[in-house]
Length: 525
Image (cartoon, rainbow, N blue to C red):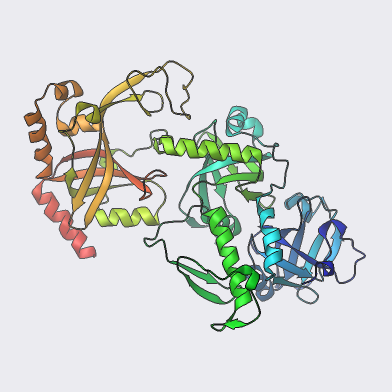
């Protein structure tokens, strides 16, 4: 695959005949349709993509055609794929028309792809892929040209409707929500919570399927057996079970057939898997979001960012600024600060009606990355009331609820709004409890004041005056009885399970109520 057979994006010109462009896809939009003005009752289909071939140059491309061709072409490659675009029409950009809705590029031109004249295919040359993949981590804007989340919050509605660049880390990814518009079109929405060293949570909303697909790869869900990853590639028609490692040296790839699959294509695919695993499946994701739209959300009474057709998202940018934020995100996560509750969003206990077994809570937590509420009739199988008082009663910052030591002068939470001020702390029960029923155990759920005081029937001052025997008796009062537990399940970056529970209310359950609800649960199984 000779390099001289391709024209660099920086050298493209409308006068070129049968140009061939090689690059990596850094952005892509959903397929859209429009009425064909020349053929009444017929729709034309289109989608756009952005392709990059060097540190400084990238260009937009648009494909037009019928339903079958455009959807087939769109499904043949994704963001992050290395592609060859053969014989596109190179035309001048028109800032007043379609290009105003596309990413800003340094090229004076754009590519038009049609079924009759053009072809887009995947590149399968390992050396070329190895050269192009690092371009995914280069922002398309100046790496220093971005707003901090605090700047966005501080400017407030002054930024409403503007398009800006953002550098932030991913805190959590919400649940994909489907909806139908008033004109019966289907849509989808996914919300990502971002953070940086100035703001602990800021919403980024994705509406496009392509953007959602990219975002959903950032934090993979744990499926149990981590050594086995079933990978489906429609690009190489290769179905592969990836078990711990592949020992085929890339330098020894040939066109010989290996198990019915060309070994060269096999190694290209394995190389892309290894690269993506290294870059996308690391602990934290830092995003440089070029041209995000900022809006005022009246429902939240705050600002939000959204991905639009101009937006290019760079994952884990190879920049100094991103490296500093990555280090900060790692430090904050290891400290447990990201697991602290944000603004109180708990439902009133009286409005929580859904009943779950422990296994159902775990299953829903894996399927649903957003917090949810429920009731479980379980035994408390771990309740360390007879431990030392310092493990039962702890001090927390009054501003951010982060755990602190009693002799601390200031809060050590890097996200605390008052970290530079004198510490204001409160003490209370702070326990980790386990719930167990016939389906399993939910470990390390938080039981804190004032819920703990109501559950135990005593204050912290009264508890400290109890004897060891009295604390043990209080413990066994719950270990021997089935309890009705109202719980909030949240995502957690710190716990191995990826989720944590927060007890909202707990009391010894009425036997008749237990029988009624457990019978209903068994009938649903």
